[in-house]
Length: 524
Image: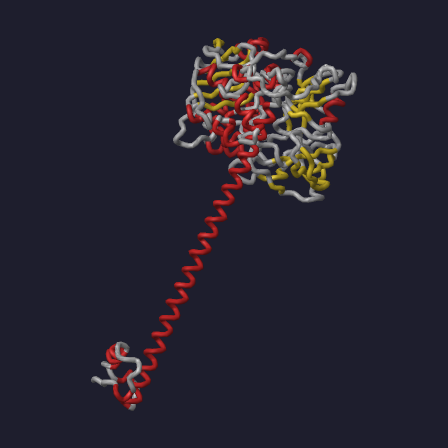
């Protein structure tokens, strides 16, 4: 496989100490199976999965326990065999309470036969491969958790010509993708080939930062066609962002509010490639992932293959515990991760690592007013104005932040990293996007209610008009019957016996209603 240097450089960015030395030499190891697994039904972007099991059910590893509930959703599978003990609403690493399925392991770890392997995947239809990826609950494992079956099935009007595999792993401390590239190279490559077939693209770029030379060398030994290349990236943050990776590789900019598919690209992740391979070739749903457990206070930092639903406490125990009590535990890395309130939260499909920091490493500060130094603007890789956006948000002018394109912020943390006033810029932007999303939802609900009210009013008018029409018809029928009766009495026989009687009845309807029966003209 040919190696090329990234031909372009994105604007902004920072170069924090990578701190990968703690775990990058630790090979992958399987975490012992926990006795209890608490599996959340939200491990992805989009609608929560809906439970298809009930308390007391017996399950095997890989059985479906919650089904995708929409186009943007993902199924959830049992990470081991055992008994469903019940369901609990518990907080996730980001603090959101979601429903969890509590499974008590039976220790047998029996595997389900829900998904049959496709060793002949090369001859399978593309639609069948996409369906398999969806059935396996595969999502982007770089952090966002976007359902992979949707990403690799772009609309017909968006022609994809390039597949980019994100092996940058630029977040400090994290080494899960690095070890996957070293220890499971063939699985990564096979997953890439499957996605390439699904997308029907020739050009593939595997982007790896220069601080992972061993991974670059290992991939360079793979025999393949000249349309597949390794892109060597300078060690710089945030090279792992898909928009920045597209730019440094191709020089294309994804339009504001757009997706990579809009410019003919799809960006995949190392871990996701392995999950695709396991789903298609092995018939395994996504029920586990590689997690880096690291930090200066961790006794034996490492990279573990972990079942979804495993508590962080189990991971820290497997890593030998702590040299001293950590002051902060972060789910993810220090730039984009979330500090957790306690370690009784569980691993999901998007948990790339957990970081424990000592009190000395944990910065305590008071946020100060913006001094308009402009450093945050200089390092923003999206060319936004963090200083202006944060001041607008502090003034509760969310509309101004929206006009400044706060929705394009992907919360990389570069601005907060360089701010001399220690302003919580990323938190400001998260708040603004949350408020904007809430306002959008409320507006959509209001419009829906107005539309429903308009439909109800229109329906009511139609019913009234229909009732009036029915009443008019009934009134006319009564009037006709009265006239018929009067004519019959005048003739002394039924009006139906005279062929011209109907015309007489119709003509009589036009006469004075006050006329007496004897005064009406009778025609034959």
